[in-house]
Image (cartoon, rainbow, N blue to C red; front, side):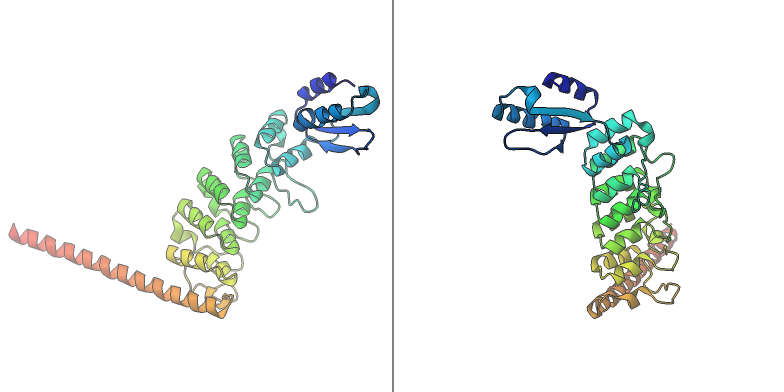
Length: 298
């Protein structure tokens, strides 16, 4: 097979893997080589070192042995957004491409990209209507946003939350949402992003509990994430709220030091609330007095 024939064939199938097999005096075993490197690196080097007749020294062939679904998943794992776009364009039915392997949990392309923090791949998939008409869910009813939040991928969380804020409040099979996942992982920046975009406001969102009654505050406390504790309490989380076993978040403190810090935070938050209430009351009272003075002078 001549070099020109190989190049012409590969132009027709850019997303195929190329298997370059060479037999020469040093001995090379067959190994998969991406097509873009085959022509720019491997073949020119081989020809330079081996000026023998081509038909007696090597064989190159394109192999289309890999299913498109597997090639697409490989492209996602490789963070190759352009290749993902090309494969989905040729195989529109694979835009979701759930992974039905033993430990795949039916994760879609977006689940995989979000869990790995690949922002550009996520943008391509969303642009290709991956999340329409509703967000894709895996076997645990988790969204891609939940996986990104749990892994602490700030840019991906920002993009997905901004693209569809309603997804923030979706619950998985355990009753957990993206805010709880971020709290479990201790990802404070991710948590702040979610609380910024969550529909209905942050104070309402941080009171949500899973099927066992655990709130985001319970998860942050049990894992010793002090910054997350501060953020949740500042957003209005209830430190006294108990789960189904009648334990509040303070009871799950990871260490004695964390428990002391937690209690001090609660006291500090309560002081600020009282100070704010007093200030608001004073302002209301002052406005009333000014109103009376205005009427009297009139």
